Image 1 (tube, one colour):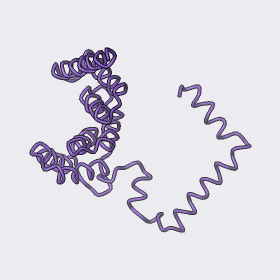
Image 2: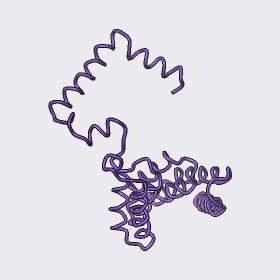
Image 3: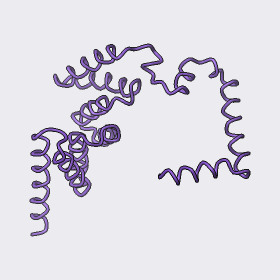
Image 4: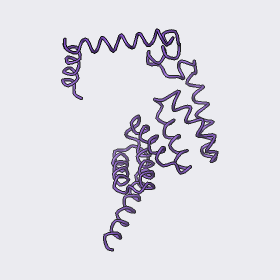
Length: 192
């Protein structure tokens, strides 16, 4: 959406014919808050103010770092069930921290749950779009699900980001290897 499109959208919302609808939505929301008791609920109010659950609970960055570090240790030591609990929790209470979603995806991928892992990596990519590692993991999930074309696209995007200086030389090499593997097996399939 461009600035001009956004201005047009807002103008349409504020147009007299839409004003009643907008006011009805606001009134319904306020009524819900009062009738449900949410107006006094600190979690609900905190979320309304744009705070994360971690912030609402009073957790510091240091608290979140400790929890992340513990989860990461569990993940690298292959205690996937325990790591999954920690990273699922972190993704909920600190949802704008990209690495929480990456590690959640890594747990799920290693457990063979490619569909849900793919969703976690997609969230990671939305938060850290230039990181080739998330694109690589997404490509691996897509490939495991049999979607070679989409996997190839993800690997090519990862290579593009690596060539821009994001990630490491290993990221670039891994993306090139995956693309070459897909090209080679595609060639083998076309020869049949």
